[in-house]
Length: 245
Image 1: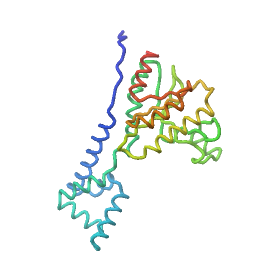
Image 2: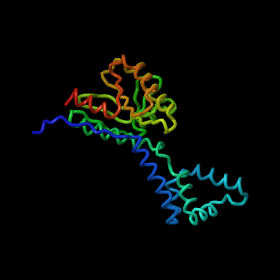
Image 3: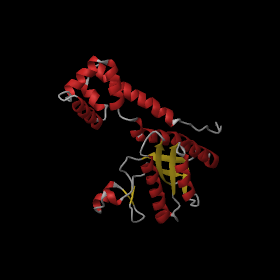
Image 4: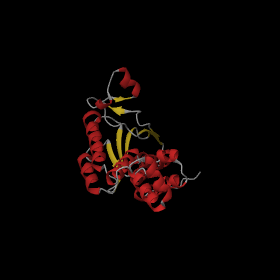
């Protein structure tokens, strides 16, 4: 039997997002070169396309149609490349992909430590703002509880040697929406303090970020609570190895 201590997996999410953005841009550019409008529309931000067409119309009345824009792209590779960079989906808007990677890396180590991390669908479990209940969609429908009466959903449920829930976030300086991310973390932790402070379940705030000042504020606010733990994906793996392997 191999009892060698496992090594945590470490991801560079800033580099991952950089590479994803490159591939997103390239994908849109390739759609143009292939004259594939259907695939093009599947890979872009449609609201940004609307803005681009409005700008073209404003600068040169009569030139704001999609057909003229498409024709320009197909006949001018440099224009197409610039358009692709502007219209492609922003990697920072695809946080769910990063969160799945966080949870997947942690679960590989967790399985070796007698812990299971179950990735949850985005609507699976939500905390009720005004009490300790954690609700399923069925509960919300049965008791007529609206979405705005609940917090953001949990990203994973954890069982085994640790029981509780995980909120997973990846946010970087260049990603935008950082304030919203930290507000969500703070709100969820505050709810846990008010409604689950005596629970044996643990809330794990899994946060990968380069915004250390914002992160340290949250850490300082909740470090006194033994059933609220904050880690990045690498530190959480180390915690499980050191305490449960």
